Image (cartoon, rainbow, N blue to C red):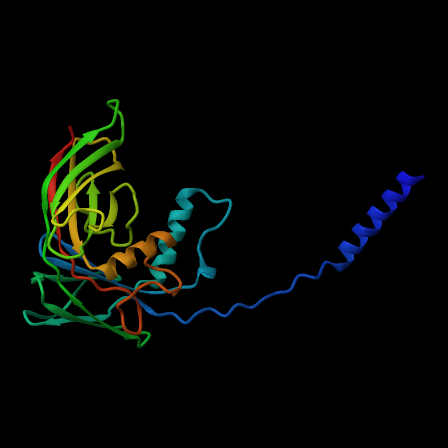
Amino acid sequence: MMRLKNYTWLLVLLANFVACTPEPIDIDLPQADPKLVVYSQALPNQALIVTLSKSFSALSSPNENNIDSTQQDSINNLFLNQFLVDNAIITIQGADYNDTLLRVTKGVFVAPLFPFTPGNSYQLNAHDPVTGFSVSSNATTLPIVGFDTISAKRGSGEDSLEITLNYKVNDPVGENYYLVNVYTDSIPQNNFFSFDSNSEGNSISFSDREFAQGKVEREDKFQVTNTDTLVVSITNISKEYFDFLEARKRSGNSFLSEPIEYPSNIINGLGYFNLHAPSASVIEIK
């Protein structure tokens, strides 16, 4: 009889819990207003690439369940194409450069023969005639820093995709920040939206705070395709851009994202305008 009473109380409690469960409530979350997103990338042949897009809400993500990777890639490309800005007017002005950038493809513009003069500041202005949005930014070029020594060694086994990169940098005076990129073929000139490890290259950013003044010596491991040759670049970057890259890595490495509080030097927009020029080396894997 006691056991029956215990079950009775359990049933009563369950009934009360179900009865007290509130009905689902639809919540209408207002989406943030879109803004222009700027990103720039220096190429070793003295050209500056600038991409221009519009931000979008995470609620409009194109990811769907029950579709294969090929379909997902197609959906992502169509989705991305909606937010690339076409026929924008982008200018850069400085002491030794004053020009309107050339359109390469939708959302991608180039400043050919850009000087990257260390210590010089340059003003970027961009206007989208469709939305009427305008943004601006100012950036200063830092000195180009190269590798003192660099070597790469493959992991155990002929088919190993892991390589260990050893390198030294003659670190300039003061606090400095660096971006190292490893490419398995050549420095890509058409993929301006990636930073994380992918089929085209690996990237790592770091500061010189853990090293003795003037000497940076590191050993980093990367996963690469089965190749005998690497292109490795190092770029002297500002602390502000370093913070921006760190925030992007934590958020999934997307330039086209909802407008959350990333570090940015874009007035009235998002992203980052930087003039950090890389120094590249071609090395053989031992």
